[in-house]
Length: 286
Image (cartoon, rainbow, N blue to C red; front, side, top):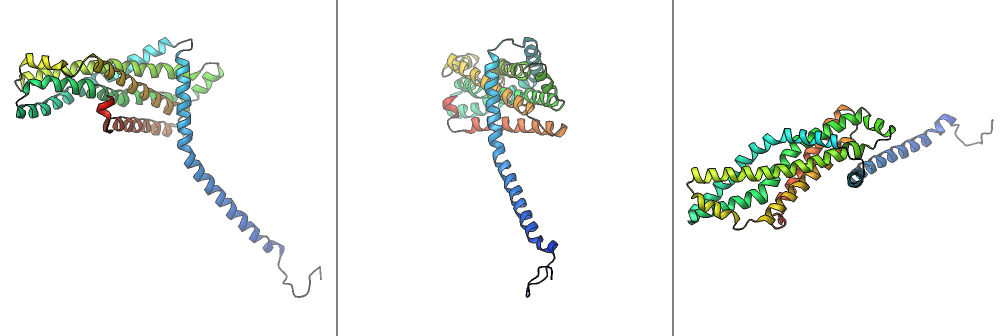
């Protein structure tokens, strides 16, 4: 009957296809799960590669004409305007706390005249670059990331590419250089303000001899230390600008993605500063 052999159950064709469908569904689910894990695992690698690529493009664009001088000046003024007052307000209590703690130890040892030595070393080698990058990263870099992120989700960067304008050269380079230059200048201001505050606190509050404080400034801290401190601040500013710009131009997910990019920028810069300050050889290479 219709090709059926004796002893074989009459199974409808629809039911005979069910095991194949279940098998294909299982294979499809396993493939999707594997693809998802591969995407999660490769995301950091792609992000690192994208950051390195953008950094190299930025370095090349810096020495390539034309240079966006107007955008550079606007960004430098903006970063300086939002960072100057917080930098000064952070520099004074940090240095006063350093001098206060150090002078207590010196008084116990009978060497209060060396107060200027500790103040100069702490302010120049440590507090200057750290305070600078904290303020530049917290105020300037986050604003850069938010600005570029908003431009990205509005497809302004794609519009620039259509018009033949390189977004790296027009937007990223001025911001990175502005963060670098402003961080260098702010580090110098932190050193001056910190030493002035340290002198005032040590002389007028802890009654250290003014001449001894000034004479001790250059005992272990010289011009080379000042230059190294400024270079460190410039490198911190450069990294802050690069991280902020990369997070801004690679943002996705609409307005919520911009907020996430800003938060990630703060987190990455915080990790960078924490890693540099807490590493065992920080005093050596600083």
